Image (cartoon, rainbow, N blue to C red; front, side, top):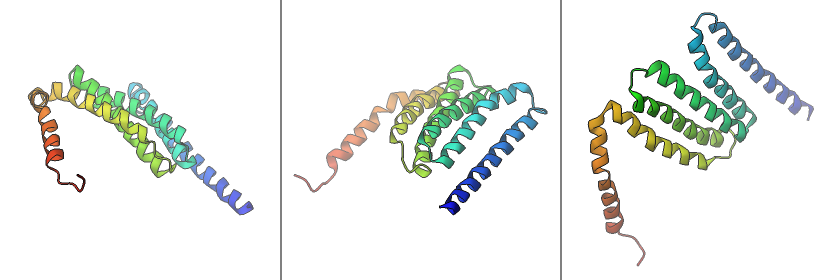
Length: 171
């Protein structure tokens, strides 16, 4: 039992060291990188630390909170610093898709590290993907969006035909 506590203590010290290194790197970089950018990296950084903490401690709650904080912060950073040339609907789509990615990440990390997959997180991820993609396409590729809006019912027809024509064992 004492050996197990020593191992646990070593693990905690190891991860505390990693957190201190990450925070130190952020604070050191803030001396050289413009304040606006460092401010925008604070939320994804905090989210990443929460995700790391949740993964190490196998805590679904920390993984969920960390995923949401990371996704919203990363979306804001991407929309404002990377894809800033996109017009408004597409810019909002970047944020929404970033949040969608965080929900998928919550499902994956909760399954991988906590052994308790949060399947419900796939629902907001799918919904936000369905909203974010058209927002981006509305500015980035309006002709593609128009085609999708016109022809998406064909997917329903194809799915119906596949179900109808499927040869199953039942009567």
